[in-house]
Image (cartoon, rainbow over all chains, first blue to last red; front, side):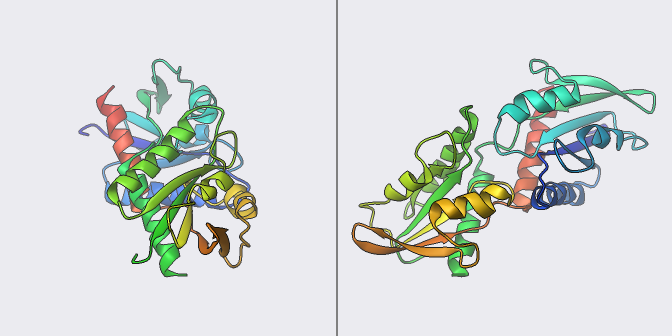
Length: 134
Length: 134
């Protein structure tokens, strides 16, 4: 990643604090590990910043590409319909161009987390923790 | 884990196939990596097996403890209210005992995935994939 890249971590949002805590926590972990990446968050429902506000929050950062990553386990109505509509991305192209600070910035929409070894490893870790705290 | 352990991977369920695919895929990855663990799935809504059916599916396996792991990113109404009610677990104890094959089997309810380095790593991987396929 040689150009200046932004990651917009997209959250579902919830009336409970937990979804926002997880999405924000994940965004912070990415920002801490990859210090050349500009990381922001945006929520679909009930929490702030909204996804639009999350995009606006890249103003002044100089990013030339923003990758919007749904912090969702799986595709569903939200990732396939609602979020592309909010971001102004057609499902086919999975990308668009937005204006920030008067410049064109590429906006790319990634896949959600999906069935990955990393999720399996984390689920197993949670199982072990529950067993050992029993 | 010296006794015979089961993991019940709990999914949200969806009218789309993706949620079930991810939860089932994660369950298969756990089963493949940890061959001494008996892994089953159960869904809250719209998909089969239901969570109750998932518990029944441990019959004949000889497990003495089942850990129910919500394959959910964060706590919310589903993990805090709906699922404990389905499993017959009070929020405080986070465990109960069920009967399978005429024996007592301990049922323990774990935390959901949460804000973990593994989720951050996977989100970053999805961002890289989206960038490289652009």
